[in-house]
Each structure stands twice: as C-alpha cells, then as structure tokens.
Image (cartoon, rainbow, N blue to C red; front, side, top):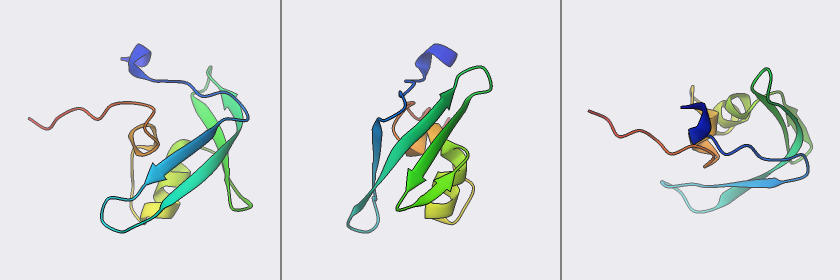
Length: 78
C-alpha cells in the first residue's frame, strides 16, 4: 500500500481542482519526511504541517490528504 503513494519533493507544486465549484488551489511542498509520513505545505502564505491538515482547511471536513492532492488513487467503495 505504501508503494501506491507518489512522494513529492521539496519545491514541487501540488494542485487540487475542485469538483463542485470552479477553480483550483496550488500548494508548494516545503519539506518531506518519509520516516514520519509528513509533507509540509504552503498555500497562499499559510503553512500546513501535513497533506491532510491542508486538505481539511480547504474542504472544511476531515479528508485524506494523499487522495485530495492526487498523490494516491482513491480506493473504490465496496
């Protein structure tokens, strides 16, 4: 399962396109800590300690950051 994740590098830009409203948001990857599984992001001057923290701030609800940012394919619901 871990190999299903696509790890970004510091300096990469991640884009999320909204489905229910027009537009997108771009995040800059500040640091990557594979040992602890954390990726720090900056969005419009705000720094987030993880993919999920950034995704939750943008979506307003708990969200899997890996799928939100397109770094892991979402598993189909059974």
